[in-house]
Length: 297
Ligand code: SAM
Image 1 (cartoon, rainbow, N blue to C red):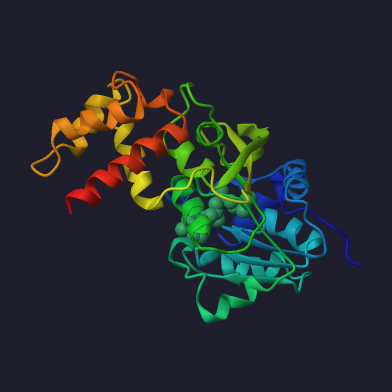
Image 2: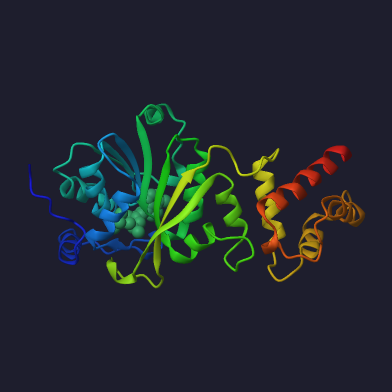
């Protein structure tokens, strides 16, 4: 067995970048981990073992991929930046259980024939140190993919992790909280200091663990339309629900009286702000709104 030499150290990372004459691209969220302890904690958070298949997003030069390959059965890693493909061939040469797919994760069709095997593995998880500029689109893409993963372990901007785990009535609670918590249980596993990356980012990070709920927190007839409804309710945080919904919904087909009816029938005070509404209250408003529209159409 070859010696395990972490890629995630300052000297090795700088050395690899110099040898391949590569500069990191800020536009692609390239901040590389240089602290093995963070990687060990991610492995633990993912409960990675020899029966686990892992999807990784953005392997970079392989800091996290190396740990995943060491502990998991198999790793499938999607990387948008073609420059890293040959580097990964070298840094991960000791592992024959890693497949690199040079593709934008947001363009991956998980229903494609060549990826159906992912639905048959004994256990699937997603682990990534995410490119922060597309954290939410990536998570929504994975949730909507229908892949049978039991958890997502994601390093992201701390502030975004706080929104995803927020409680009703707090400053961090917003439409993203509801979009995530509808289908997933979200928990911050640990906080990550800025100085464990090259280059050092401007923001603190956190590792968030998302586990799938047995069934959605609320049942709504049209989940995508529900998300849009919640988004408009939060449009201007300081405004009341009444004002935000009036601006977004009232038009020649939907009168102010009908909006008033919505509040009367649900018993929800129109002067409340969106951040005080539980997901169940949002669902109640939304279902009635859908009913009103189906009666009109
Ligand atoms: N995994 C490495 C680590 O932990 O050090 C690198 C993480 S770095 C924060 C994010 C990685 O995501 C970069 O390698 C970047 O090129 C890649 N990336 C950015 N946008 C991507 C996309 N749309 N699809 C796939 N990979 C992407």
